[in-house]
Length: 466
Image (cartoon, rainbow, N blue to C red):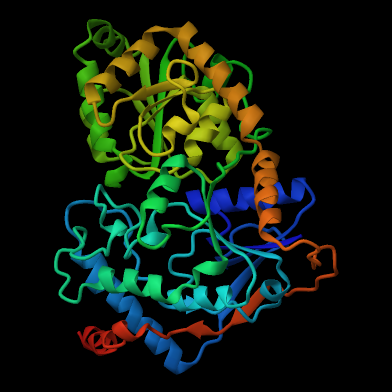
């Protein structure tokens, strides 16, 4: 079997890391797999970068569409959320590439700003099974990546609450054209979490389609316990008797990551006399990867900010130096950080939302808190600070769970079983045949818009002139 994975990137981002881990997982079980990406980060020879053929006309059109994305969408957001909202144009037309023609299965992943409605349709018209692995809600909405509590994706995405002034009702038009143009007969959906499967089944676009839940995987040989916590703490000059609490996100200012709720929870922790005493004695320390909000200073708790971590082994050491991980996301699918932390034997405290309950079993592998109850979140934090034995037991159970269920080959095997059900009996595969592909694949860029959106070109011209 030959699987061609399509994703924006092969590294540097949650969806990119998840897609790349699946690519590596296929290799572990002997499935031929290639990745086509817009932005290549790794040195993997089976990851090929895609670039569009350029000419003055197409470059100008792309600039106009980018101006529309920036001015009509990015600068026109309500305070509801600041998570991405992506206009699904233009698209790279991959349908003529040899790796697409030879593929038995085409596996889409995170393709916003890479594939358009039209370019997806061209892949579907090839007649091959196209499996779309969702990493957020963008595939079945009018443009938002997380709906922030809105359920209009179930109907028509009209009057989007994430756009301040939407005189053209763009999300409604986008969703309508997704439904009218995308040939659903060869489209199959995979989601990493049960939550995302449920909301996809409820959506206007994917209702009635085959939707499979297959969780993400993790390199359990990289993300693993390294000695005891004390040994790992030494690397960062932290005494063994200090409790390290880890949190992290690309930016502490991303609203759905819940940093404001985490601050509220820590403020509630101060109601506990033992917590106050430990803080005063400097026996509690915060570790953070990514960029924390400046409000972290208000907690008056010592912290170490590691910034962006690009090395898995460094990230592993940070997990190992942490006694537990706090994950206050308000919306999330199946975060890689959750699997990474648990694989290192570091348990979590998280709100009971999204894909968290798929992996975290309350009081066995971590703590699940009722959604957005910061008082309960604080109670869990304090309880784990004060109970080293409990932390160790949760950590051991976490590691065992990940080892038994979330290895690269576990995920790849489940995909293999699903893919085989989609292929006709007696199917002749291109796998194991010789390939001689250049590192960079060139393709046309698809600038066509559905009929209802064609009038927007005039608006693009106006925006460009501004």
